Image (cartoon, rainbow, N blue to C red; front, top):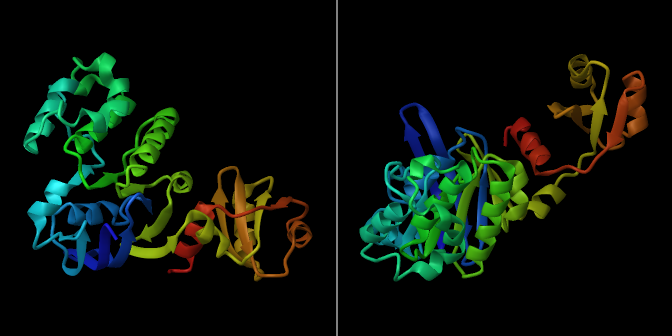
Length: 297
């Protein structure tokens, strides 16, 4: 595996940021790390890009150990942190030239790597980075992470804070990047982005809940799931949580999603809830995540 993480743990004082985390990413694979803020995603990325040391466990990038061979890992890695970290007073061109020089190369030498992305930035090449839109900042940051032709790419919440169109465009770009054989590890708090990954790991409170393809993770659910809509969703939610046949109930947009014990059907719930709207639905990755969190796994 090109990115290999084995039993990594990390504490910050009394807080266990990572708890025995293991995962691997193959060449030409987009691997998604999905979880809420504070789940441990950024801590893992900082370990893999040699910015901090793990307390336990080991990790390697393209065969180089992140602790004992940190200089090799840095030379081989492209890293896009969650917060925009380019120089806002430098232009698009100046930022690219600066980051290329850090790795002893030039934009001209490696332009083929960034050309499809840079073509969208070209009209703004003289504009200061701080004056770009969120989507353009995102594309510039990705160009800077790729300008030295890295062997592996680490993207920490790259689509946070950008519009839906820019998010979609970014994932289209990642599909092109992975076709070159580069392993891509990307974190996101958006569960809908799981479908754009080859495999994902669901992480919460520093602990990996489950790993697999999005389809496999969803298929592991064996409990019926219903969408319920009552006149007062809050009171309906309380009633559902008090029912012995209900395993889990939570607000989900305008509805309440309800996991029940096997054998329960929509008519059973409808009668118990005085005729509330009840529809059996197929679970998504977010439903599975909430269920795993509720089980304390």
